[in-house]
Length: 365
Image (tube, helix red, strand yellow):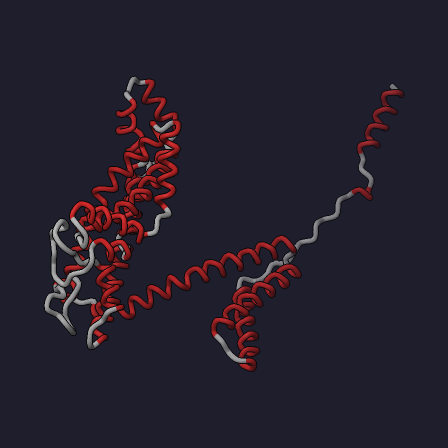
């Protein structure tokens, strides 16, 4: 009994931690108030503005130096008050926000310039009249809008089936040298300059119909060359994200491969494929160089893409700006308005792409 009691006392004593081993309580860092970043930004702007007012004021230099001083001040003050980790986080946040604002500057500038200059002729006459017989004020871009829609529609009709079927072959069937060769040529076509596509279409139809040929279908072929690799790449990436378990489950039920692709794979990625196609159309609808070479320009409405020249919005805007008549102002107004209409069409196509993506996205619930 005495031995057990002594052992118990010894064990109890050994469990007691020495007083000197108690860990120190970590020091609690302070926190900057919510208004601190805005206050530092305002202070940096005032300081830089005062210095530049003496040495010579420049808006660009003022913005740049204000951003630099704001980043340094934020880091130093946050490090003193909040610690190194929080200060680094604030510094990175400032750098990322500054990069975003720098990227937005040209976008906002382009939108403001086009809208402010193009709103003057954004009227009913611009959408209902052509340039047939117009040498000064008046007229419109009805013929160019119709030509753009016809040529882009033909390009979409030709490129979408080719691009989607090529992507299906590469993902579902492609193996070996043929698949690698197709992938290589698609990558090469992605980087082809647009003027090369226009020269290719013009040379092709010049060999068939003779030199000097200009028609809307040639422009559609040129846009098809530019559009196919975009459709292939976007569709291929969408098909790759389909889980193989879905294919294997379909095969296990005895469903043929072609029917699995048609009923399982494509419906699963329909939203992404449609979005990629819509963005590809938005990409080529504003091309100017290939249409300058293969289609040309006309002042009247031509609804037949297989006969003579057609007008398109990019080419109409280009010629109105670089070769205006007298007086210049009506031609420049029409050029800016054509650019505004083209920008609105591209914006609507992007909105349609987002709507399609949301409508066909796989339901998670």
